[in-house]
Image (cartoon, rainbow, N blue to C red; front, side):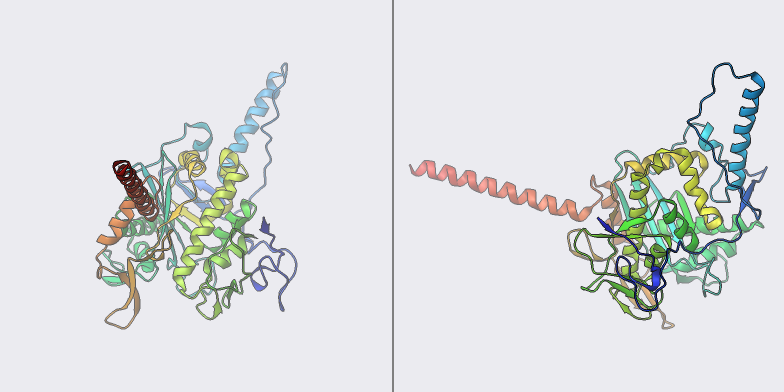
Length: 446
């Protein structure tokens, strides 16, 4: 049973009483005062931004045409339906590629995948919609979702934002930098004159760099800003989540104002979009408690938010309804840039429904069996900047790739669990053999 969030938002306690200075009442996160519409580029088929008012539409699929309706009325109904679909198209922003009508009238398109039947998606966040936020284009939330299209076995891998990487683009950022600079570097080096295409070029370069580190072919990318997170969580009716924290006091973060009470095992709290965003940002960088490892702890909670959104979307039937799927992406508005096509939406929904809870593959910290893993470590550049680098050595991703490959080839997606199961099986076999030997010895003695 999830504790209900009482509306105190980030200035109060999630699931508890109102704290001093907290505001009561329900908040739903920042509102986008300028609603968006879209148009289609006739040459590329891509969705383009326009700033116009967005009408609301209502269409009941349950109503049926009655026998004997005059032909003129039938024609009028058909025209209205076509008009409705066109208006949906124009109400969607530049979230996806292709045309929204493809999601309704064309057969669902098979997802791109690698030789292991894995579809891999780079999901990253920026704060470009937050006025006055320094380094707004930097990707401070970097996550890869890898899922097997046949079995639904899935993994999430967080990439430390301070990982030091080489740069192959002429973007004015230098030949080496922290990986969170990769996206804006790719945008700056794009040869396109179109702003949206520049973003997509930056995201593609980012996906290629991350793929090289993990040894994965990353086919898709999705960039989301802060309000996009708020809108998606609110679109599924909020999420029930057990946040990660250390100690016995829950979480308090001074920057976001987030407070989460200490929870028992298996207990969850219900969060709306704004609160989920606060959790995804919290890392105790300026004080607080519960997240002593800063970015590394924040990455765990970002993965849990992603899992919680998927679970909620499945449970309320969103992923089984094409119109709801479109509405979910509509909630993102111009807060997401992706190379996912409309014709692939249903296939993504099917994959999300097939997926089990994604197994986290930490690059540092504890694995699923409580074993310490250290595929990355902290270090310093020659200029004195604090960075993260592979434990195998600067720019040496061999151990990371081997680790990820074990998960990709595993039936469970969890190398640590596989090793524990193998050790238990070997132990049981030894015990069985010893028992048989003892029994034989006893028989001989008689």
